Length: 358
Picture 1 (cartoon, rainbow, N blue to C red):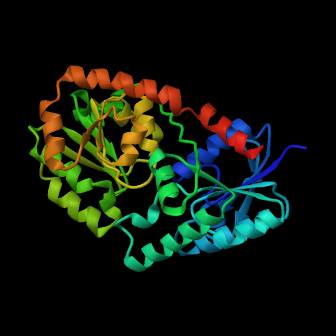
Picture 2 (cartoon, rainbow, N blue to C red):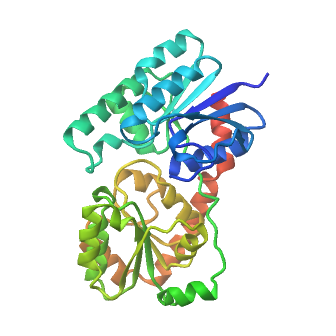
Picture 3 (cartoon, helix red, strand yellow):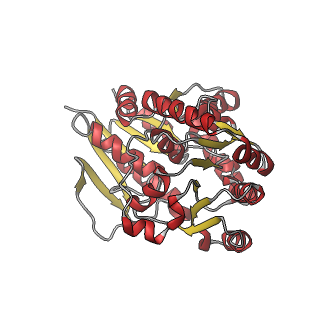
């Protein structure tokens, strides 16, 4: 009989939220034929509740997988999985106090907590302390640890004395749709060379640094897509930088063809994320063979094998945009694609998880 695998900690399937959900989609797509996979879903997020998806069974919890209810979501899901699963894959640091019971019951807990979320500047002191506590209890007690970036693995080793398996993130689903006349009519500045950025609008993604860098540059256009209207921070930043005619700040776009059109045809992809591990949008940009200017932090350097171009502040980014020859960007884009093809394909990622399952 195939091993029974439970996947816990995401909004669920079909994927419609973020990186972990996309990861689960492709893990199921590649492995459902070899394993009996159950994915726990956040019931309030799904009006249509499918019994299965891509060969995986779906179980809906009456709680939200994010926010204050996330602890309850993970706790109840893990307890439910105890009754049948051989392997429980937990995504995100939660439920650590239950892990010893899993071992007693003969269940294998595999933990991929993602990034070091408690360090994100968007959290208040009390939330950071709670998240740090949850991380410590989970990392110490999980049977198997997975990190998606060498920087996270080094953190596990130095902080908790625990080794982890390096399994990264795929990006080969990134596409290059044809540019349509309606798209070009709505966004005429896409006809010229431009830089592109996409991110949640929060401080630890260095939003202001990127915008300030382009404000200081010689007018090279920037298209930046994000959820500007969802916070006071985003509204204030958008109001301040919308006065620059070469900076185009667009609200979040969920149509994948439109989003991929902006990304696939840019001259430069700008990546400002400073927290977390291997970032999905970065590896997708690498698969598209884009030239990349990345914020200089250990996680981004590990992802790009130190072969992107990096900035530490707005002045450094402005200098990169002004002074880097086109030949340098062109050569770098080929290197980014080679790294992505070698390391960040879903077939490779799924095979590594299959080894841990068995």
